[in-house]
Each structure stands twice: as C-alpha cells, then as structure tokens.
Image 1 (cartoon, helix red, strand yellow):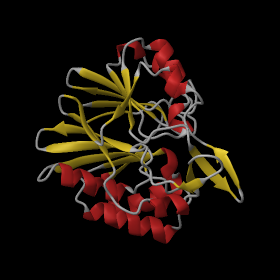
Image 2 (tube, helix red, strand yellow):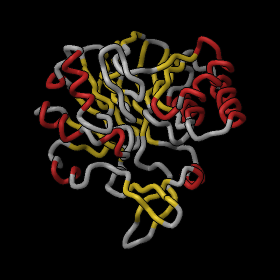
Image 3 (tube, rainbow, N blue to C red):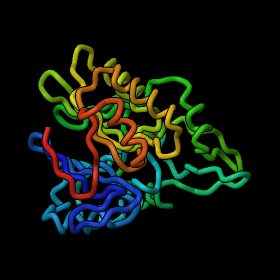
Length: 271
C-alpha cells in the first residue's frame, strides 16, 4: 500500500496546505481517493505530483464536514466514473455552535442531488472492493462527544441535536494478518475507532491508524490520557496531522515515541 497526502494543514516541499485533508491511496489494483479537502487545492497538488485523478477507481468521504468535502465538485469534474461512498447519515445538516448561533459546516449545498448518480450511501458495514471495507461507528454515546465539540445536526426547522457522527465511517484495508485504518477526523475517538475495527477483525493486527484526531482544542492532560488509551490498543503505528494540532502531536509523540508519525502535504509513505 502506498499513501500520498494530497493536502493537510502543513505545507509540503513546493506544495501548499490548508485546513483540510485528502489522501490518494494505491492498494492492490485499486486507487482510492479519501476526502477532497477544503477547496480544489488537493487537485492542484495532485497535478504537481503527477497524479491523474481521473484514474481514481473509487472515492470515499470520511464524514460530512466542509474541510473534507468542499473539493468534491472539482473531483467530479476531473473524474467521470468513480463512485463516491458516503456514510448512511451523510446529509447537508452539519453545524457548529457559536454561543446561541449555529453555523453551517457541512458538505457543499446541493452536492447530494447534483451528483446523485455518483454518490452511494454505504451500508454500516460494506465491502467496496477486495480487501477494502467501510465501517460505521458502533460505539454508543457519541452524542456526548458532539456536544463537547459544539457540533450539531439540524433536524427539521430550527431544531438541532448534538452530533453523534452518524455521518462518519472508517476506511479499512486488509494487509495479510493485519489491517490499516483511515478515519480523517476520528470524531468518535481514535481509541474507540481502533476498538471498533478490532471487533470487526478479531485476531488481526492493527498495522496503522491514519488521520486527524481532533485534539487541537484539548488540554495537555486530555491528550496524554488519550495517547495512552491509543497505545493500549496495541496499534503498531499512528500517522496523524490536520485537526490533531502540533502541540497535541508533540504530546502524543512524547507518550508513544516513534510509533507516531506526522502527516503533511505531499508526504508519501508505504505500508
């Protein structure tokens, strides 16, 4: 498996970053796009790196937030065939709470109908290619995390409920006796997500957990406790960036050592 980071918060050599995330993944005979960042910048970087997005076989949206979905219209312009798999709960209803106000933070307005022929709402547990699987969250009580993050789902007219991340799913690749897990923001908690995958793949090694961990707004004590929980899962490697934040990355590295690797725009690595 070869992974290329098309965009991350951190700039790469000759490549600009932004608050967003996009991965180009080469696995067996398939190429997979995971997320499309906050803007078409992911496609600009792909072109600079010699990556033809029209050769993507399938695309996945990790969750329904704008910093992962806003580049999708550009992807559909560049690729005329790949299906985009979104979680069952993906809709145009994600909001951030700012005091008494709610600000839209979801997928581009109208995209679900504009590209309806290309979008597939994935089952909670769905095989999308040989060795490639999408898993919705099975951890209960995630609305508590949504309330803590001030993230909400709009239901009906002016009714908002704490986000339970029904619009987020994990992308899992089988690698021999182990699996590699991608979850671009890990709102359900990377430790919870690893445990969800372990239940779905009993006896398999967790070779790597890859994505943002949404720790940029957390206290040092919270991050250290989180890192220890991640370490306790037995995961062999962690690749993280985007919403993790540099301070939290440093603390995780302090707790877990060289098991933790930093994402940045243009990074290429193999597993």
